[in-house]
Amino acid sequence: MLLLHGYGSKKESFYYQLEALSKYYKVTAPDFPSFGLSEPCGEPWSVGDYAEWLKKFITYCKLEKPHIIAHSFGARVAIKLLAEQPELCDKLILTGGAGLVKPRSPRYMRQIKAYRRVKKLFPKFAEKHFGSEEYKKLSPVMRESYKKIVNEDLKCCAEKIKNKTLLIYGENDTVTPPNEEGETFNRLIADSRLEIMPGCGHFCFSENYELFNNKILTFLSEK
Image (cartoon, rainbow, N blue to C red):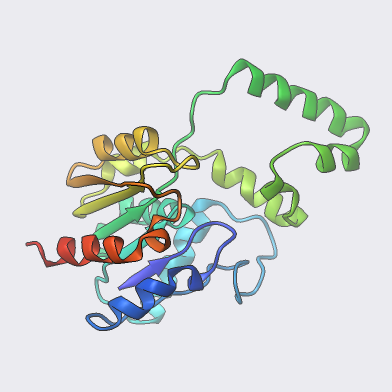
């Protein structure tokens, strides 16, 4: 079992899965480069760069067709990798899976244009006053990496996934809403099933870990 954490997070976010799943599986949970206790990247990484790193990690650890549980950004990496090499994994579980670029609203495009104009004249002011709080906390290298990651649409990759896939989303997830990301990935990934966890948000795997873990174990026991 291979657990892939979300953006800005670390392997410990899967605390309840590490404890429960270790009773049945050999569980491996790395920190992606630049997260947790891993070394920072020296340059901005794209989803593809992280996917290549994950491939090498699986080989280095001699993980033979592990089941993968991937949260949010981790789902981006898993989708990117398995689109081309499905044989590296057995079953795939995506929770709060991200990777879709939504249509840009006129308001959003106006903000982007304003940011670019201000950045040319007052770069420090622009970096301080534009963007989400998550983005503002990032280092310069990670800001460029973040841009690469969130601007890559993985619809075409999702269509290539051949692994049997379970999609689990929180009913109240506002980061990756189930009626947007969840339903779209369910349509794109041929052998997939979508399940919605009531009363949960983006971290449904820790908000109601007993239900989440039961869903996983049931799915993995299916032939």
